[in-house]
Length: 386
Ligand code: NAD
Ligand code: MG
Image 1: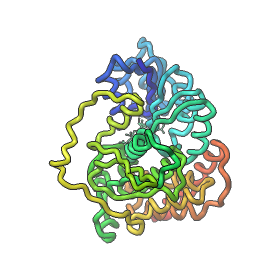
Image 2: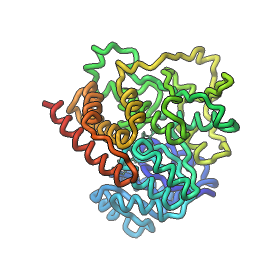
Image 3: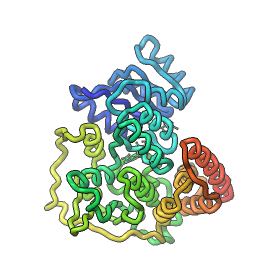
């Protein structure tokens, strides 16, 4: 029996993880859950999975939950400190890191510092301080298992091979809903159109990131730190069907790939059971019926976000954290209908240009850069609104 903590249990990855847990109750037990402010959904999860401890980042939500769960034997904590306590102090075999955005940095880092194994969906902290997370994992002798489908594919395609034989890794990208749209049309996309991902059903932020291709940019940085591979050896290819989840090319010309129907439960369950596989039994992958798989090179002119991420990774220091923070502000402003779709890369690029390079040696450095970049991006957002 594995004891599991889920950070961000009320989101899309959280729900998929709980679906796996409910199907294999003799293999997994939920000991801790956290959420941002969705106390209703968290309450349902508490009643079903009976964790001993939970945390909400919103005070109001925690208060509402406490009053509804009086007499229930669950401890309800609040705020970032509460989230970190659930991550680090709850004895567990695996912490699923599935909060969205930089808000997951401290809880995920707390889990690593406490020597917990982490299954990572929350890519933004990896973008901000990937080198420090890996350093901490090494120090504590813990593992970070990828959940992101591309990184799970690379993880699986690296197994049984020698690292020095790797020539490059290739991340596949669906291209999002606007891949083949002319720029003129992209100018006027609505939130509803941007939230229509062709292959995956995910949280709002990552869905917008997929439409701008920033998601792939963040994934390049995530891959850099997860697999200790330089940016020059990471490529992107557009693959519309999301059947090939990513590839590793070796120096003899062999290419290993991992394929599957787009369902996050496959990579999540692999991270939860590694090196075993559980009988999820999805529909068979019927390639004969699918007929063809399509590929294209990425278009960094029409979708500059992925290029900005490569630039941030190459420059290093606090620039990836700057990129991430500016993206979070810009995406939220787009979701709030304050700015246009094309303002997103502009705000990120201008925030990056305003950044004075300095090394990033600690989590505190990252948090300071993050604060600065959020302020800068917010002021640029205000200009865009006018
Ligand atoms: P989501 O928006 O559906 O869920 C986010 C979760 O984080 C929720 O439980 C929410 O309550 C919590 N949260 C939000 N803000 C918070 C805050 N300030 N403090 C504490 N908790 C907060 O997001 P998602 O789609 O599940 O994605 C989660 C992470 O996984 C993201 O980093 C995303 O990039 C990554 N990811 C998601 C998918 C997917 O299929 N959804 C695939 C690969 C990677
Ligand atoms: Mg992905």
